[in-house]
Amino acid sequence: MIDKFMISCESAAKLTSKNHDDRLGVYERIKLLFHLQMCKICNIYKKQQDWIHEVLGKKGDLKFDEEQSEKLKNCIIDKVHESRD
Image 1 (cartoon, rainbow, N blue to C red):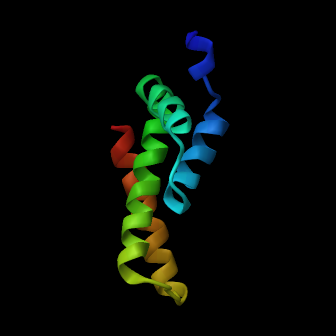
Image 2: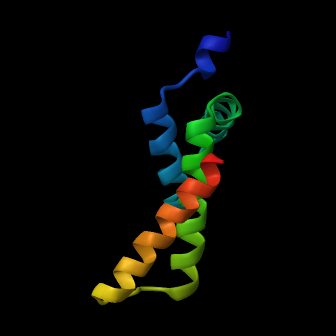
């Protein structure tokens, strides 16, 4: 029974991304939530995706120059390091 809910990290990443674009079905949500409860790395990935989606969602379509791109990149790297601690 529990095997039905077991998914790979790759599948969890795809469902996490899909969740921002479309509404997941009940079965997909259950599988993703089940995986996230057991996998710390995927949970961190989901939090990062949520944060990126939130930031970009507030700004709409963004065009970055080189300096802005570098700042965003460094901010994301800092968040990744913070989430690992």
